[in-house]
Amino acid sequence: MAAADSSDNAVAASTCAHCQREIPSSNIALHSAHCARNLQKCEHCGDMVPRKLMDEHYEENHAPMNCSLCKCTVERELWDIHTGIQCPQRMLACQYCEFELPAADLLEHQDVCGNRTEYCQTCRKYIRLREWIGHELQFHTGSNAAPAAAGQPVPRPARPAAAHGSQRKQILLTIAVAGFAVLIGSILY
Ligand SMILES: [Zn+2]
Ligand SMILES: [Zn+2]
Ligand SMILES: [Zn+2]
Ligand SMILES: [Zn+2]
Ligand SMILES: [Zn+2]
Image (cartoon, rainbow, N blue to C red):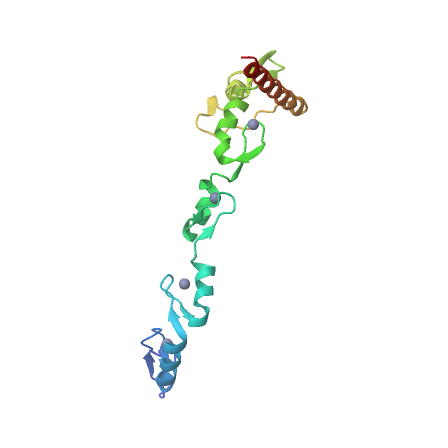
């Protein structure tokens, strides 16, 4: 189908039985021999690949990938999904303290982290971090603010960042002390 070539002597073309490409008839014999000997159709993508490079082609394009984080073998088509939302060891930031930790540990951490309180200057009381957004919406949104913007992403409440770091240290200390107490307790009993 050398349609583009409209001259009388349009190059007659034949289809190579091996690679399915249109080859000028004058070359078809030579091509076929060469093609069959050297090229192989990739069973994964259908590309014609030099036989010698087939392993390389497979490795580079189709071989499952190893996730260095969770040590899983992942199909190449699923790689983006794996690293994006599935890998249990991918690093995610805690929504409360922004500390990054593996996804598998995030829920447990956020459970604890969200239970911490922070002092609301306006209300003069301590509010759990997990209730901050609701608290801000309920008590501190301007009168004109969209009524309770249900279902919309809510901007992160502005928290006193300076106090935050020291509070975190304090919590670590508390945990350490509590752990120590448990240890003592278990020795005594
Ligand atoms: Zn061919
Ligand atoms: Zn391929
Ligand atoms: Zn992984
Ligand atoms: Zn946290
Ligand atoms: Zn408040």
